[in-house]
Length: 509
Image (tube, rainbow, N blue to C red):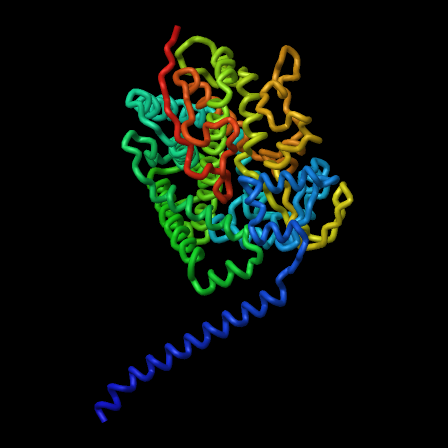
């Protein structure tokens, strides 16, 4: 009798394991059958190249392949059937999506599902009332003189107290440093101070590891992988079973959530009443106090993540490709120095605004290497784009700034050349912007980037300070004039392997 009692738990365990195994098998079988039934099989050359990866034989990056396809298309629009996606580089289509028929091209539920685990209900992942409410609040805060002054003071301090000493130490040691990593650390420290009033200290000379930055990198990379999958069933099945990349993503997001919650607690402890950082101002405007419930904490968590995405990766991406291009075009760096003048004193906000040539250099860099290489909307109802392309309801429609910067019909025969003076067409050689629908690097229309001016100011402050004090020479393949950078898959562009550079101090005459 005792032996039978002892055997019962063991038998129950075996039965449970067998039941779990059979259930898992049936679930996987059902997903496979569903995939076979719903897969958008297509044998066209575009879909074959995408599925087999054969495009990589001729192109360094997926974006370069898209640019080739869009240049070859008479309308500047192509279909990738296996993705259920229409891709366009036609400015008229971009204007139609982002302005003329804005309501028919929301982010959509599909996009929200792709990024929802990371971005939650943040401004970059919502539509309708939630989007309008957050945008209105962000517009009021970013447009205030107090916030702009506060942000510029932080940028100037970070440049002089942290960035320049790190580069000077590298120059004196004759060391090769990864400039992409340096700029990511700089941008992370800066956005955390501006947005949360907290200092992670990533650009200290010891170069400490930031758990939040690492977890955020992992999460954005894996979310981008979801969007590249030929069918959402693939990543949804892995998420359901908690395996592979989805398990890694879940762990990364859990860490992001914990660290964001710690930031919010710290900000509450320090008080929000007299603080100028953006999180404090959001909390104050929402009437936040120490007794808010989990829903409000989730809302603030989503704001934290949105600020990090907007202010860290985009700025560091643009600065990295800028110095890659300046290394290959030293005459442009010389012209920037001449415009900035011979004084060693840091430039003021008003002085930076008057640097038209430097402004043109930044825009030309982002024309060729936009930090966000493509953006997607979902067509809510059947529609016809201005170029005559029919789009059925539920279709993903992607406009592609990276490809648009390589279109001769937009930029002329020299579209591949780094030529800042193409922007200096105003009186006295002043900077004149192009239509945002030809140059949607900061989006356009109703969703145009609210932090555009702040980002440009930050890039200018860094670019001018560095070129006045140092010569930056890229080493390895990225320094070759003929070699195109290879980008890592992600929500924002980053160069595979970083940007190794050698820095030397400039001898002032």
